[in-house]
Picture 1: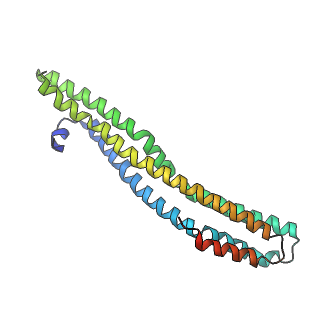
Picture 2: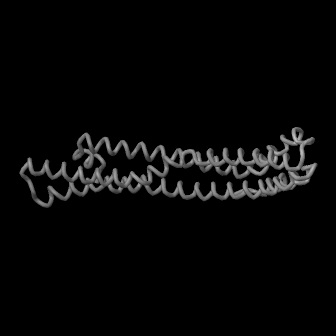
Picture 3: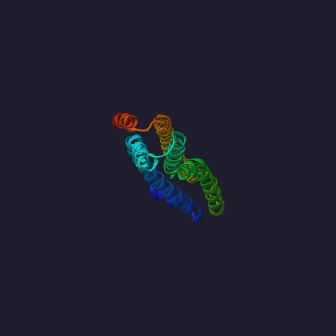
Length: 203
């Protein structure tokens, strides 16, 4: 079966649905690859970054009480983890939406294609199996295209979500350790430990 054989049975609605699926496919692949790269980079730097954020607060908290140091450190860590969460979720709505709607776009394209093909056959007056099987079978391609777009989006979404959960768990774990160290006048020991762990935190 040639693509041109399928294309000749399509109308403007089917063509629009095809290009919509094509655009969603390109967007989901580009987004998925970029998000995977970003999540890998974030996993390598999150521990050292948190330690650096705490280190930057040391000059401002030397004269503060332990309770004040703990509060300031906690605010700094929560703010940074909130940024990680926001940044790690960018692009996920596109992947989730593509995974959810692509099969239905393909199914609608199939239904519309079958309707269009049967109407054309009825107008031509040729209703034999040979005339029906080709257009109807080729209209089913839209369902396959919808699944072909949705499946990679689902895979990207699940992998990236799993990586982000691991990163945030790592960040929260290190944050609790740094928060405990903030109760001491000098935090160099705790920061050094966090820096050492940064070299080992690779996916």
